[in-house]
Every structure is written in C-alpha cells, then in structure tokens.
Length: 266
Image (spheres, rainbow, N blue to C red):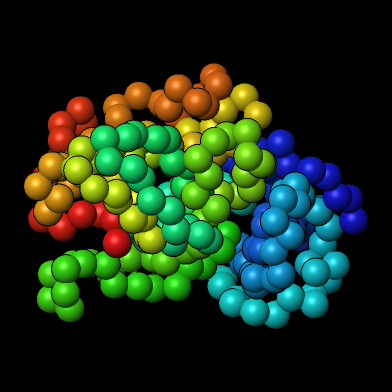
C-alpha cells in the first residue's frame, strides 16, 4: 500500500481495474474499488482528529477488507478509470451552535467565522457521473423555526464560532462561512445558535486549500423582530486567491436583502 497526503479535497484519480483507494478525511474513512463493469464503495465514520490532514492510500480491495459498513455497488460497463471527488455544501441550512454563546452589544457589528461539514460527491468517467454523495461528518437533524409549523428541517452542528481568523486553525474538511453580524437594535443580541443557508452558497478553496463559502451579512433590525440576510456574490475577501469549486444547490438572487419573519439567531 502507498499512503500520501491530499493537497486538496477536490481531486481526480485514475483507478484501474482491481485497484482501490482509501480516503481518510476528518472522521470519514472511504474505500472505493474498481472491478470489471463495477465500482463499489464502503465507508464508516471514526473518531475525529480535529486537524488531521486528509490522506489517500492506494492498494487492492483486500488491503481494506476491515471496513464492512455502508456497502454500495454500481454497475458501469465503461472501463474509464477516472474517479473524481468534488466537495459540496450541505443540501439544507446548517444550524450552528457556538461552544460558548456570546452577546453582540447594541450598535456593533463583528465578523463571525462559522465552520460546517462538507459532502463529497463521488463521480466517475469524463462525464463525471455521480455515484453517491457522502458527508465527511453527518450532522444530526434539527428543526429551526418560529414553532413546530413554521420553519424548516436543517442540520445541527457545533462550531467554535470564532471572532478572529487568528484564534486558531480550521479543519480542512469543513467549510468556513464569514458572517458579518450587525446589531442595529438598542439592546444586546444574545447569539446561542445561528442558521447558515448552506444550500444557497458558493463553495471556494483558497491558496492554502482551505474551504470557504460565500460571505453572509445578517442585520438585526431596530424593531428586533426581523433579520435581513444578504448573500455576497463574490468570493470572501478573507480567502486568498479563492477559486470556485461548486455553485449553490439552490439559486437565489444575489446582492439583495431578503426579509425573514424570524431572526436567524436563537
């Protein structure tokens, strides 16, 4: 077997007949095998080493026979060896709960950096035929809304919710969303959780191969009953040399504030 680090989560490989690769990305261990007329995969989630570098290990199927979970087989008569891994953002909103809540003082605005897990699209052939999307970390389901009737099903995740990029490193398998929080009210704004519209954001990577999303501005208005949300059209300024990896799953009108009945904070 041959093991090496992955420079980027967006990669294309040549996997010949009877060859396999194992990808270790955060808590995800994914094995993909190429046989005559068939691709197959198995995967499992393990203990997460928070800042472990993603790796790829090449071998044959028997090298990875210890992984038995989540077996998926795909019949495919074309013997093209091309395998592509394409990161995607979640297909729902991400409700992130800071590890420690904080108050945003009246009249203040700050940048908040929220990280969320990505999904991997496993594609084959030059036409990038999708086999399956697999989350690097599968968040739990949650409900976010005014009540049990008004709202949406979302994913729940924990985040450091850093107020500075200098506070520490970010995991390579999580996407960073820069959120400009603006408190236009006369009182403190307690932030215990925040909803990120992941399905409506672009996904980028920078020169250090960190993943970024479109920037988001959230303005709590003076009446304190509504929040305005603006999704930025361009790559975030914090992402040096950002390159677009994938477009939003749900297209929305850019550079326009969208009113929400309920604040996206809770």
